[in-house]
Image 1 (cartoon, rainbow, N blue to C red):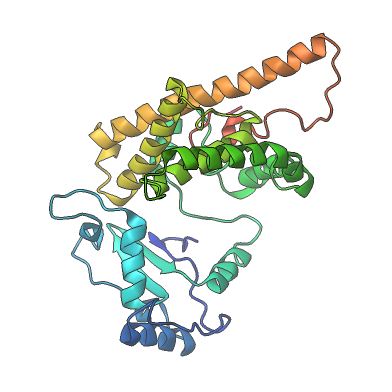
Image 2 (image 1 turned 45 degrees about the vertical axis):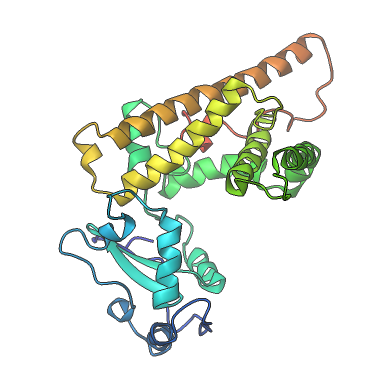
Length: 314
């Protein structure tokens, strides 16, 4: 949620309407956690929220880099911050101030306070890329009435329980393939060498199966080249997004290596997404030409490319 007229991004700081947060040692150091809870329960304001002290101009940016100036995984930094400062802490990256929360009850408060037209921080690299390619900013980056209009059109395909139920068979096939793959890649001790990567494959295949109503092939054995490139591009897209958002915005004035990597990954994902959609539309056209009954109007891609962060406007 952005405070009008400032560059300060605050999720929500509503001490009078939020239940006290019970911190545990596993969540935070006792002293800082108590400070956070006290500030919350005594009608404190933004200045009372604990958090790391930053440098002039840079703020806490360097916390996200190691001594070799290699970018850390943001969630690991945030996890350490929560352990140090408690369930609510603030930090600052360049000109942006942020409030970070971990309590699900607080998250519920935030989303309920969004109103009819949520105004959330945009992902600048996504917007710049889409504008350069001549695309609309898309559902994930729109706001106001236009966001509501686009979301309404997708809600009929993405949020109805019946549509989710219709995809259960496909998703169950994905799960079965994942379990088969897990059995094959485990080592002699029965452990998965890179569990995070295997879960990434599962989640990407599941999302792709639901969105495109077609398997991506990320679990094929032996693996095919294009699905492997899809996995790599998706990882690069997420990695460079994080790096561009958390680092100095030099990409806005020059072609930085991170920006080039981001554009390369985005271009590939757009073309791959278009291919999946076009193949499904071709299948439906062929079935219609052969007068084969199409069981339901829901048969087909669940969303257009415009709903994806890297997608082209439909």
